Image (cartoon, rainbow, N blue to C red; front, top):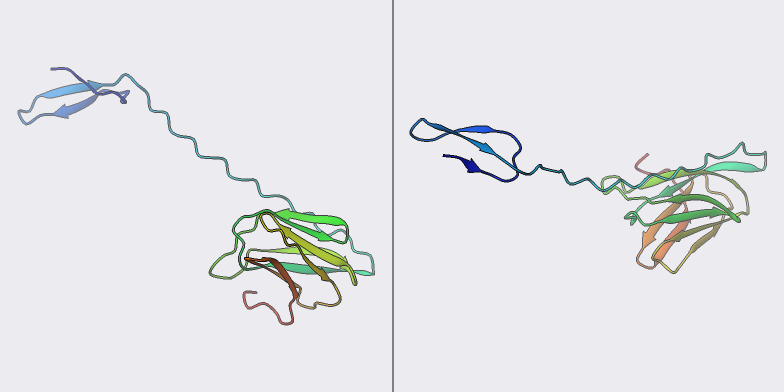
Length: 149
């Protein structure tokens, strides 16, 4: 007896109850479904050598992010374009280091939110916290070291 199973490309012996064996052959080949490509992680420009009047500051992207595009500006310069995802265990998505001058306006815009957050950098010894709420991004200076550090 000859039985044909579509989808197999090799002969496989199969034992029946009476001890006889039959070979199965297929006519089609299996093509695995390709995985969708992973989104490339955008590179963040490293802070350039800061002149004496600029300091390097950390911007902590914390809660509420789910992969939306985020753009971060210092003054008129686009510093980073990211797609952060908040981690439930730590409450942190990413930390971005930027070189800023005191008095510079920092802006954050998130795709899908009409509101843009703005903050004039005066002094933030522990960095700037960015959270995403249903109303849009919120910028605030961090007054204490983060608990996840």
